[in-house]
Length: 203
Image (cartoon, rainbow, N blue to C red; front, side):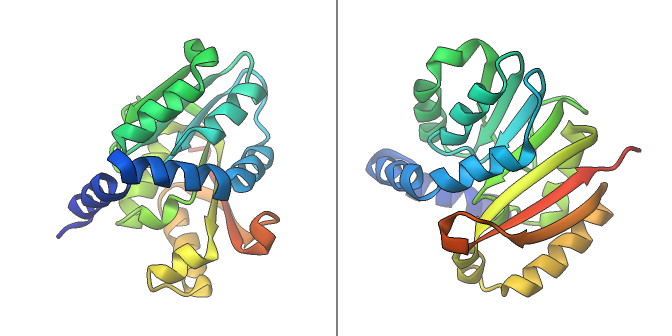
């Protein structure tokens, strides 16, 4: 089973129907602090455009809408159920939000569309990492920041050590058009979360 097929299978299994509702409720509780920390770390200006990757039930979308009263918010998630739930959660700001069912390897926006991007607990699914990182770089404007947060247990569950993942990710993102690549422990989730940040190369 290739990576794209596996991700589609996981999306259908865990993020649709009754399991989707359970997963969304769990994500709302488990990821809310990390979503808030990701938005605060990105610190977008009020009129910027920001992409949320793997937005789940839409907690991060709501936080971005509050921070971007004059801006635009795009979002992708592989689950149709999550798109529906996040759309419903954020209907008050619908004019400034576009949410799509899509995968990180094929983001349905033109080149250089966004001033920044966040991803909470989704980067561990970016396989192959280089292909996904290159696609994120494509839709970011020069100088735009990418901020991701991932639970350390999510990386371990994928058979990766934290140190090994950080080393590989940092090298991969540099090769895919990013600079100022760095990772460090996050403050939320009692420190069991890893922040990974990078800046889109100016050229």
